[in-house]
Length: 323
Image 1 (cartoon, rainbow, N blue to C red):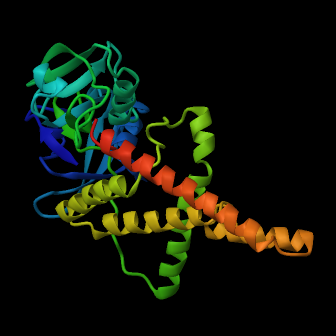
Image 2 (tube, rainbow, N blue to C red):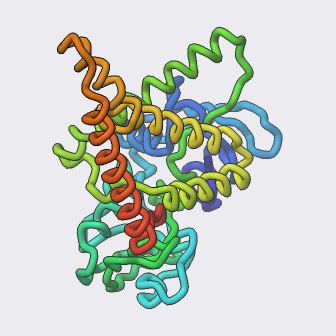
């Protein structure tokens, strides 16, 4: 979606106005602003855009030349926390971060690359390049190692932003989903598919950690304290955006995670009980009651100790979503 546009820009000359939504490029659907930007830079000729007028909902087409757009990416600062490194460095809401230690953010995922960079450089002074009102600036700050609760390492809330060289700015790369009522059989099939996707994500988590696709901090265990905080964040976003599916999906995901954890072969979980049954099948006789009770007791103590440690860790180093 077009969120800002200069009167003499290529988009404006093509009849595009503030708020208009781009649906297709040369008849091709795309899922995010990032996808749109990459389609533009992959082309050098005219592009036909299928548009929807913001004010009337009317569909129309517009033609722009890809070579003239000069598509760029950056990280838009939505809010700045008081007395944070960003605040002390002079950053303000509306600024667009265009470099981190002289390196431009990843074009496909500007916000994600900035988050990874601040995580890797926590405690080390860094240089940020940013744009404010069309003027370029630089500032230095030090990402915090242990940021306060609810804040990130440099104290800003961000979103990816794509813009043209002549001043047309596009909305962040968030796929738009529309909840459409389905028949019972389709709804059940959809729920099974979503469950399978979540289970697949959990199973591949160790592999992603080994490969470095995700950091240990991103895959850290979270206690009931952390889950409550994250749930509150999702609830606020769900209410703000009018998307009940967001909080419902979070609740479903937590339930699935708990179910998978409960099946781990560790006493006193259900998976531990299944393990005892399998041992009984192999041995031809059950594990002695005293032995089983002792193992379950030890397992319970271990789980309680881990729970206390994770709660303490969540209180000392809260899980935060902003950068």
